[in-house]
Image: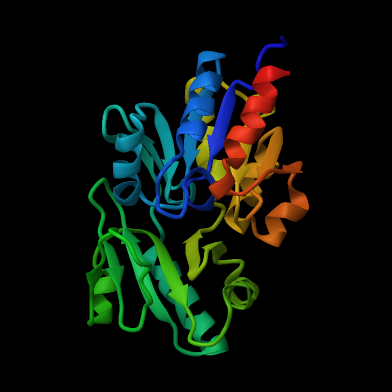
Length: 268
């Protein structure tokens, strides 16, 4: 039996490691355990900020480093502390937002505040995803800018996520980055920030290189991570943009797509 060919397994959360009910199957847990026993580290790389990620990591018994907030936060799960955190320039974000709204019309907004306990603010008309994740509603727009932020969330009443992402990126691409991270989730991020940024920082702490990394994801915000890693695996449920650049496509998150690939590599 050949040794496991990677020293780092990077997995997105939603639509990738997690099933629709936010659980991780026993088969996938076992495959990740086998990969770590074979010498690989496992890093979660998610668009979720730390406060929306921590309970999942705790449930997994995950004590290593996680990359959160689209790369803005490198978090030590075992020690429950932030190792690095990058915030969004609020003046630039406000300018970008005004330019986007001048192009496409009024938007519904939410924002993720910085820090281990950073709140997610939700403005009028923003459609929250069902589930246990907490939001703090606001009415006064000044509240949005009152404390450091890691990202803004945008929703449009008629444009699709892909249409809004393209329009926003074309309008403010030189000021901020715009990514589509999931259904109803279009985000404004600091310019140059991506999952690859955070993953490279985390990998450096572990002494692991891009050439030793396999990455799993499902959405366009995973494209930079696939560009950084040696091998990118799109889930069967992945967005077409990610599937187009992936090195391979596995089964869906509901069908243990991560385990399917890891089991094959472990038995090669």
